[in-house]
Length: 128
Image (cartoon, rainbow, N blue to C red; front, side, top):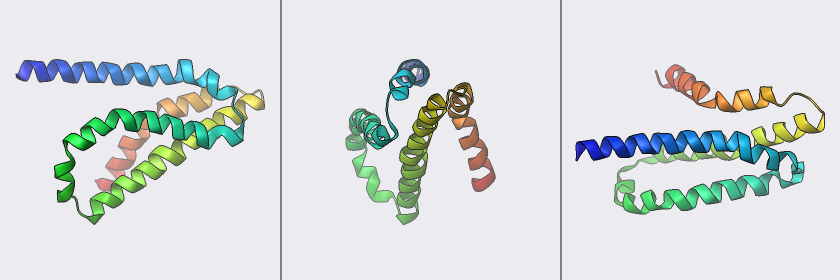
């Protein structure tokens, strides 16, 4: 049983890495063709697709939601709002603006790919 969990965990990490790479290679060319007014709709669609996949885990563990207090819910909402919706809209808007100004897009993509490092550092600083 323990070996199966390790294999499943490794596959989940590989899938996450693939999707992270997929974002820069496949989604960025689509983003470049968007206008700034299309950004909220695009971000909504990205989050809707992710929500469909994650809803399985939500329903499977919904009994544990009763154990969460207001502080936990606030952390979830703030992370979803700033780390998810607003953060994604900012990155997509930056890609569109950089492309329309004929500047190098690599700086924006580098910042996007370093986002986990920033998140870990901020958590270490803020949460100790």
